[in-house]
Image (cartoon, rainbow, N blue to C red; front, side, top):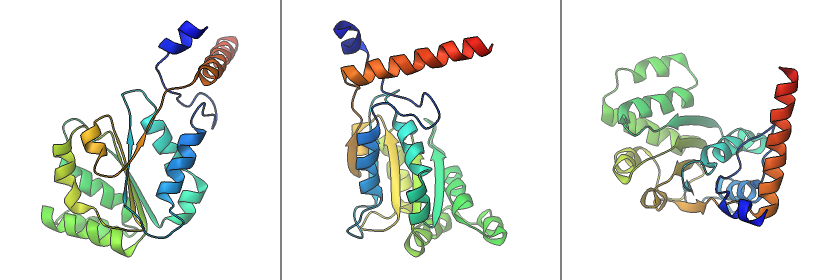
Length: 201
């Protein structure tokens, strides 16, 4: 059993309705960074870990949390592909943050610089939570960062990345591997789910 768990390097993913194995500590730590009780703090929180480590799973869990939904005024989630398209990403974020159809329509005719200014302004006027999922390299972040607050703010950027240089732009939370007990628990849950699905089929 020990040999198996020591080589089991896949972090927990969601395996059942709202069931997360080995993620409770990560969730609690990240929640305290995103909702900072002391007031304003660093606006960028980076979830850093290797591919398949559960970065997106845990970011989604926080993004959909009831406390988070109550705390922030506006929300946006964008996936940053390896071929990062800056304007497309900025438009997608503003589409989520704008609440009225007129602003969404006017955005289409804005120049790139105007999009940057508008997104920056929205983050100062509202408490926004923006998730940038899977930022691949520092060059992409350097292109995007002009649109985001980098000083103390109530708005927050939750960034997931496998690149440490990207993670260093914010407060870093490193994803860890499962311990032996958690790995065994995850295996049991996955086996039970697999058996139930086969039984229904």
